Image (cartoon, rainbow, N blue to C red; front, side, top):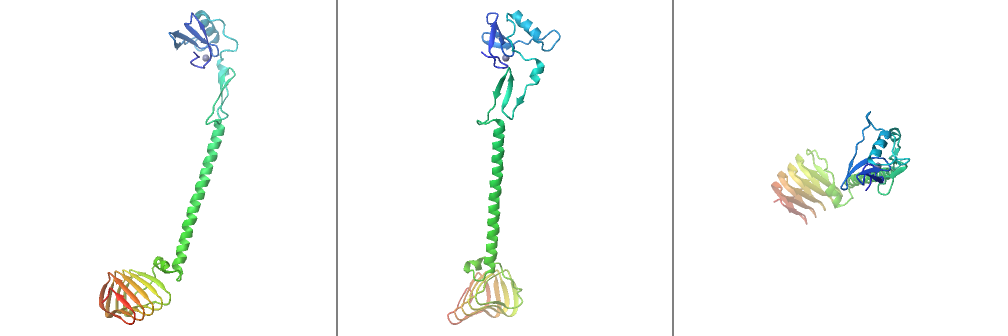
Length: 264
Ligand SMILES: [Zn+2]
């Protein structure tokens, strides 16, 4: 059995009925192995080591062992250095606190440095993500600007500007995408020539001739409408015009190897 308040060794008196801690001098009443602390109150109140010794002597104990017990003042001066992991238990005993095998101070330092590393790694990852996003944005921007970037570039191309009041010319290697334009042109609304690739999405055309495609031009119209007083589509040479879901008013015309679909 050990002292309930400090873990010190006991000395016994009264045929084992009373226990006294040899370290802190706490007194206990023993009833079949159950220890109950005996609260000793000096007549004047408070903790009086001399009175305690007298009280203990009455229970059958000898004089307190030398060095045992802690006068109140000295107890208040005990140094508890938590950071270093030492905990002064009094009587020259020091309790060593360890967290994960390190003193609390070392543990906190390790913890702080791993947190800082966490922040640095986090910042680097965010930086890489931002750079990737910016780089991808620049790539798309140049792809959109570059007319020779291929068919994929054309599909990603930003919608071209057309005021819908004059003829829109798509020529040479132009790759153009027009979206949602409402055009009303006196003559021919759209001229596609050379190797031009033109994509029209949701474009409404009112004109004498809607689309005039020549050379190797390829025009794809999705949705929208063509209201033509002369011809909806005029295709010549190897031109190809496909209208998908487009409302077409006016006859189309194809010559040479040209092909027109979706418009009569
Ligand atoms: Zn004790």
